[in-house]
Length: 312
Image (cartoon, rainbow, N blue to C red; front, top):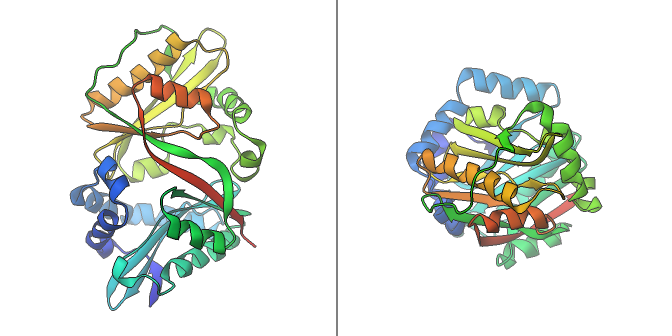
């Protein structure tokens, strides 16, 4: 067994593992081998690799992509991201022919030691509720539920959106982030904020990772003349055919017409860019955000739990 970082040549095998390991998610996302190959090639450009190594050198890693190689073939993978206080684990998968060999546990331990080196206090991950074997493994390693769960919500981008428009909906500006972060904090349970704090830097439309993945993004707010009171962003491109919407931030005083107009704007933007489906995730505690999505024609497709543990 060799545990190492992803290489440029691993792209085709990675696509096969995604299809095998996450059939429900892949059916919604619609990843393509061509898209994944294009993104992998871009991530391994010299300038992107320079930024990644420089960030790691200064103790501010952006992400790590670990794989396990057995007999010259990639058989397990995971991705580790680095929010402010926690390291976020995603895409933990092991080829079914190589399970029960401790590979998933080895990846999780590598994530733990990497998170500790990056001075993160917590490890966080999401797991689909029906995935009992994975939940049992995580619990055995000390993970426990942080939130009641979340949902992957999906809608067909080609279905017309009901409701009118509103002059209160305008494009997002960086200056909106501070007020929107305060609204999001009020809607988030304290125990979640301890592990995954919400700060103005958390409210953004696009970032370095989006550019590396060649995604196109846009964002909108509801502003009735005294600052942003609601927010939603969308992105298309990257490695999947589906578009993605951010978790909605909806202030207490925003009316249903403005919320409907905000969602309509995002959906029409995605549809105009040829996305067949739109995915979003909203925590169960975010009742106004979930209502905004379901009111805009989104349906609950997959449910998951957010689990966490301390690094040490």
